[in-house]
Image 1 (cartoon, rainbow, N blue to C red):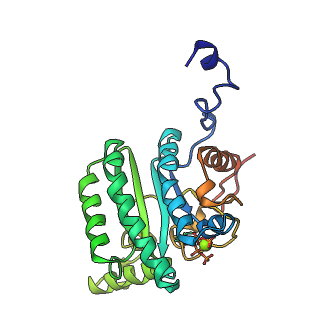
Image 2: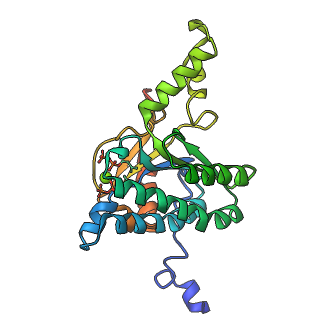
Image 3: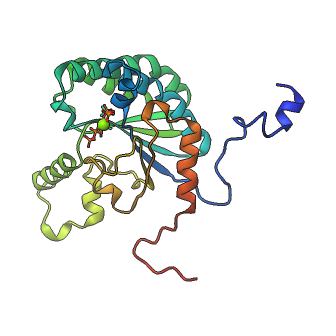
Length: 253
Ligand code: IPE
Ligand code: IPE
Ligand code: MG
């Protein structure tokens, strides 16, 4: 890059992408990666081509998250309700997820990403289960970014699973409070999401982080997930930075 280009903010716009340093960047960002099907439909392509484009988008968004200073990213990859889709789509998605782990694991590890899984492992094809477990094990000591992959995840299933474990461990009713309950969720030791982004314009939660999202800021964009890039992520963060989080309190003027 020439000196002129690096000093020129217009020519060098990409390199200067960064959130404002005068407001806090969300620590934990969760994304409902929606719109792969509509992306494919708009191009007269099969839905799986949309999912392919969606998984290819993960790398640039994760890199941008890291560059912007986000510490925890949670991605909604497959819900407990998504099993109701046609078997070809479900099988294709599972295969794509396997291929993505194979392709991305080493690069993610080198970038210091710690991979975790949120959801139930049962029902996930055994070969994908093994790859998930290997990815978790392989990256467990990394500290630059925590990446939670919500796969076969449902917020209600998570609450049921937590409750089952609490009962199985014999906790007494008076021992249970909100903090204790949180520790039994899949996210156990992690802070709640500060910002939940949904791509593709739908104003609903679709069973995602229904406990943890109690005080998250929501941001919905019409941009379809495969088109959601570092600039769109920056826009979401800038919206977040303009919000006033009150947590039910009255803030002094
Ligand atoms: C999100 O894209 C990916 C998954 C739910 C697995 P969709 O497949 O839901 O895309 P649309 O909503 O049909 O456009
Ligand atoms: C939510 O998207 C699940 C994921 C992004 C993995 P859906 O496309 O499944 O949600 P609905 O059906 O529009 O509520
Ligand atoms: Mg959808």
